[in-house]
Length: 354
Ligand SMILES: Nc1ncnc2c1ncn2[C@@H]1O[C@H](COP(=O)(O)OP(=O)(O)O)[C@@H](O)[C@H]1O
Ligand SMILES: [Mg+2]
Image (cartoon, rainbow, N blue to C red; front, side):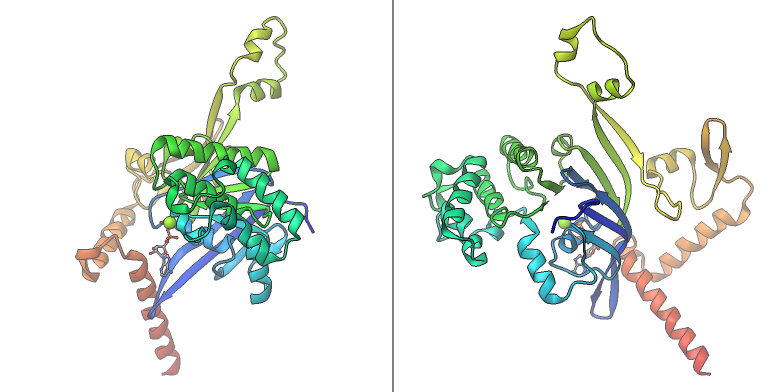
């Protein structure tokens, strides 16, 4: 059943929520590829679409358009029945509140075993897998405890055990360290890293915490429902090997702790679009138009000079925004854009009918 190719492929993924008769664009053409066995973090401001993406990848919600393929299955095309099966068999979910995965009146062991019972896993396999999982998350000694007797970190590790009960190929974790202190967060991260290494489990983690995002293989930033940049962790040792530099004389130096380099990349989508960091734009005084030139050094982006309508355009936009109501200006702009486009569509329809 396992297929080749990446674990996750999102191509121009769109998610629109309909709230009453407004449309909220939570994902606006998101592109993302995650390879099998990767341990990845997704970061981005609140409201940028992280949870929307996780819910789609977890089979809890349907995409509106675009492509979302996980382990060879096209989530847009699955029937409701197939999507339920996907959710139960392919993915494990860990939430910010461990209680979402746990049943309070069952013991640690019973909680982990329950999904296996539901899935009809044979007794022997079930007992062996429960033990292995509880040992991996370091809770075997506490297996008979009730949840109330556990600390927040232990509850979260139990929740991780539950999420893996059905041997998923992908683990999705939405802010799993959001409600715990630093040292507990570290234990949770160590547990996830162990699972990634021991079982080759692909892990996608949403986090706000820079200390957490420093411990994964790759960090992808999402802004306004699009992936905008990514940071790749490379062991310096590895990059030296890649450049074929021979370090024969100092074996101790090679054996020393590998140092980590981070490379920040901007994502370029299939249409050649990329998003420049706001700080760069502000530093260069670029507003809505830029001059782009190909040089020997690469592509240079400069403020557009002598474009009269560029700044007047910006002024016009803020004028219109003001007229819409300054009180909630930036917060609900998406709602208002959706509103405006609907108004436009209505107008076009009227024109047609005339
Ligand atoms: N169920 C929903 N109904 C309507 N709007 C939603 C729903 N879930 C999320 N949104 C909206 O979609 C956008 C992205 O939200 P979300 O994916 O939760 O972002 P994040 O997890 O990055 O904070 C926000 O504008 C949010 O208000
Ligand atoms: Mg969220």
